[in-house]
Amino acid sequence: GESVGLHLPTLSVQEGDNSIINCAYSNSASDYFIWYKQESGKGPQFIIDIRSNMDKRQGQRVTVLLNKTVKHLSLQIAATQPGDSAVYFCAERGSGGSYIPTFGRGTSLIVHP
Amino acid sequence: NAGVTQTPKFQVLKTGQSMTLQCAQDMNHNSMYWYRQDPGMGLRLIYYSASEGTTDKGEVPNGYNVSRLNKREFSLRLESAAPSQTSVYFCASSPDEKLFFGSGTQLSVL
Image (tube, rainbow over all chains, first blue to last red; front, side, top):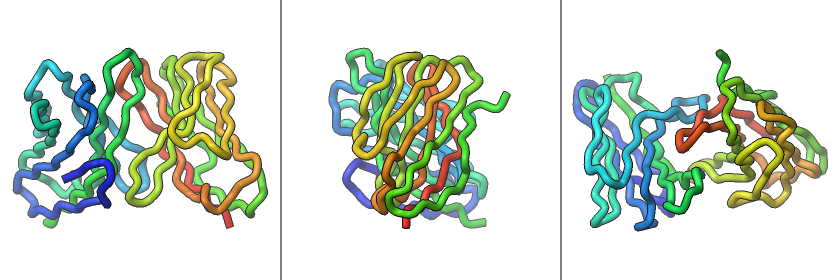
């Protein structure tokens, strides 16, 4: 899984499988979390977000789970497709009014056809 | 609607040269940011601007200066480039917590 301080991990899956990308965050005061997807040669793109008053949020084929007890965030991608191959970043925002997120180092997802 | 536009896309500099990376957004966002991305390091904030007329240092500001020219434009300047500044630079803008990124500038300093 992904965490600030680790080298870029890689997750390899087969097309059609479900993918789970993990993220450990450090600031227990963080109240907002975002997942970004970065395809090769492009800038990061927003996927889904979740606030700290929620445990789960679903989008189209993606689900984010938040466990505040252990400061853990995960992104689940259902029926993974080759187009999902990218680097995925989690970002956290500390409470206190600043909008500036802190990014993790990313997880590389490779989808094999 | 172009979103966030960065120029140039690629640049090679010699040590000691100066250059300015340009960024413009057409989404009327108040906040703009400059990040650098190095292999295995994720995105590190260089400078940000919460609104027109204000700029603040981020995590790695040394060797850089910024200008928030107007609401649309936020430029990043390297006065004397160093090899340690070889990186991919991303500009972003935001109306709130969600950031919208440009496609990046790949900079090599020889």
